[in-house]
Length: 504
Image 1 (tube, rainbow, N blue to C red):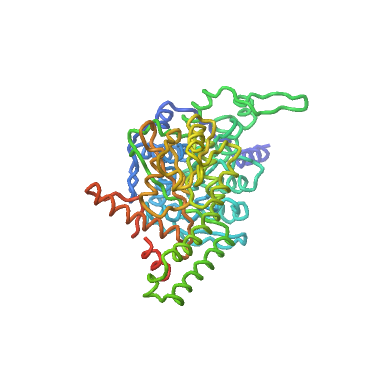
Image 2 (image 1 turned 135 degrees about the vertical axis):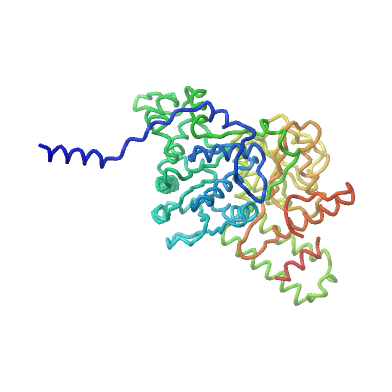
């Protein structure tokens, strides 16, 4: 009998213990929307006060969703968590959309350059490189999940985490498997300003990844029944509605969710901000661009000579450089569209500026379902004003303009987000385009998003133009205003641009 009891006792002890429930805390609820908090994380780029509050929440709860609106610096808060993890002797895995891998590499280099960062790519699983931070695209994270789960990461950061809302998708399964390998005292941080796009049921997978679906909401079935307004359609139950949403928000904020809106922290932010977003494009598009750049370099060296290229027809040089800009403009259309759709999902209207007509058309066509107006060359003043009126009234969610046709004289204050799909030639074109939103009548902080094509091997013409515009703008503002204001980047138009290309 005693032997049987001992065996039963050993069996019961071997079972996984049911985790204790987590109850919402009023203190955490307050911190989830706080505009400042004390946190000891040192970065090369200082955190805004509200970002400190977000990091403080994440470090305290360890498994959280940072759901700030786009433009409030979720990436920097994620890097701060990685820096703290490193201080504790933990490695960090960062899962991001594939097009943003290099952008995260650059953000780490800017904010925490002491961390060794590496990127893993491809569908052939191999050994994980030694590094403080490993970055992987979410498109193949499922293939790597077993290896990554065994690599003893102490922190997991998932960017654009709403992409993992489908529990049946390989991306979601892979991230969930890795998240379960993170120790209890480690960190799992999901970054998304649109963690719920349509309905509360979209929270099921993110909460499961965090390990909070059971401990906070007593499991999937309980969550769906309580918050998703179940309806029996004659064949079975559907959960496409919403119920008890105030209670849901309170439980989320009190356990695992941070959310701040621009209007809440506007007083802390400059009136106009710029963010350079380095995006990766399809390999075949990048190869085509590099071939064209090589052809341009050969043309300069063989036809004009490295020292004498400037004697060539300026129009001919500009035409050839514009061909390079054109290739990258077309290559990143999908990136621009995805960025705009993320903003629209947060209830924002968006202004997009580009240079080439087919780039403008491709962007407008892809976003047509949201309501799009365009202002391009050749339009009458009446047609332009009609487009502006439709946008300002909210009939159209997207305004797509060509730099010279739409960059001056128009008021587009219905939006506070400007997306630069291509890089203009001059600082004046850049500032004028941004200022269509940043003008009298604007009540929000304006964010200009500059999407530039990245290549790990060498700079693209996007990189070069961004850096040169930054340097030129510093010089111009120093003359006009008495002090230099840059475009928000580091780096040193036609001579410099060509010399940069042929110098590689």
